[in-house]
Image (cartoon, rainbow, N blue to C red):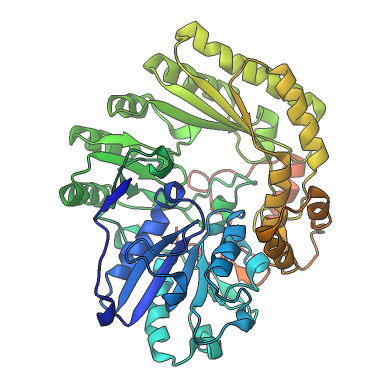
Length: 523
């Protein structure tokens, strides 16, 4: 049983554009996505548009129970590469022709956005008419204004080429990423949807919370992190604006819980003031993302006081590998944070990655010892606290310095087998090496992957067949996503990859100097 408040209802007969906002993953994940909810509210602010949610595995809308095929536009918000399979399933089950050349004016126009397709839209380019590259708020209103003027959009896709940040596979056009420059003038939700349910399968990660968009973009430069390269530079919402949004949202919803959303919330320049101000106003505060370097004891105390129970920490690896991936955080700093968090009474969750370039057997042994040491700390302070570890294989991503690297499933399997044996009795979770291989192919593959995606939606394809599609790139190769311009100077990613092999760090530009990585940086 589920009931929602603050959803939008409109009379269909008064609407020019019926917009189906599709999330090709389950409700719990969809309603934890701030971006998905921003688009829903933004488009429904238009009098001529009714934006309805369609969430997998359903193919009908939540608002009016309309089938997907009834909409003028179906827009897929894609956060994860594996969601490509669900996109195919939704189109097929809705009797919408899968391939764009087979669709007619009677079918919805299929568009898509999100981080995975911003980095590399090519694996699903045969299924999508138009991709929105970057942050959609800048683009969607102009796109809909033009859509209204075009009598048959399927036959006139060239008309959309004049809008920046749209990639149209039919023309394989070059396009640049769209980014919100001024976060205070960006779209912020003040009527959050409230969900009433006893079913954990429908309970969002943050439960019923006001999601405050603290910042976007991260320029720390962790060399494996796609998000950190897609959305540079860092852009912050002012403290005053955040407090205003929190108070307005509470008035409109009755919610008292705040989720601070950003790629690295503790990097926010006024984070202690923000947490203190919200706590003094009686808000409970949670956050999914805190950078080790910028978490202060003051922040920890306020977060604990406001109700946060578990702190998530991402050391990623042992020190010398952290330095190679440009996450130069000394063990001492992490150790101090662990002790402080345990002393305050936090449960802890740690994220580690295995499979970095140049990673040796000795590195894995050292990682094993490091995890054992961390786990033992709770018994010295408070054995009742929970300490959990998640160990995931490295997935090279498009548009990062690792985009030319490959994925060695056999090596990952050996490392996981060793760690499972040596860390028996510790609360560990490992991601599947096979799933990691699929993610890598979906992230760094080209248009040829579409046939594999289509086939996988209907049947279970063996890992041997997936392995046949593992990309092999050299640094001078033309890459499938080369027409997607994130604004970097041409050799920047190559330089970062070379620095990785040389064990050279690139200091954080917000505390050091500008490296001229982007020709459109306005930080």
